[in-house]
Length: 190
Image (tube, rainbow, N blue to C red; front, side, top):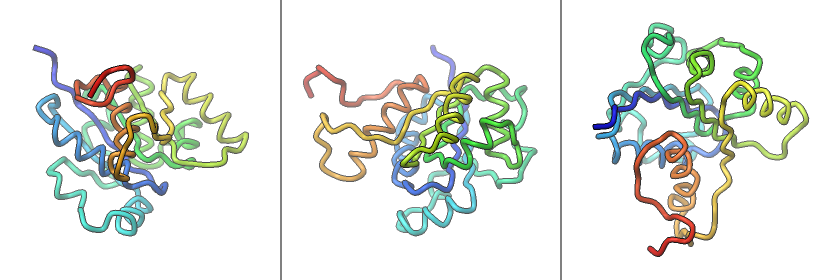
């Protein structure tokens, strides 16, 4: 039997709460593959969630939710062995703080821990256009071992709803995180 995963989900303040919602929906469906799921939301993420999602609350998922300054959270230390952190959506500000090693809240501390422990950090960047500062930060995070998976949906799966379109990104993220899931695959018949 494969080892159950410990995962941290950071929801940063970029627009695109639909990506976070679909990620939490899918993690709920594949919860049998996890040992622990911790969630952190920035203050701006809470505002965006209310504006963009409003009919669902993050607390309703039943995952462990941590305050942005709760440095007693298990994944604030490498000894807790959380294998993966997904920041979805990821703002340019959070990416910049991670790239420069500024761990001023639990989200950036957890990302710092995942990178220093040589584990998997997946950042779903929601920013456009990109400045040279953003591009340099993307390079720095990538060189440090992070994976940048921009929130760019694919259209070959013929998604009919905005949730299905967001799922084209989220499914790719969950693939990168090593989860087993049924999803549209290029060249496969549905």
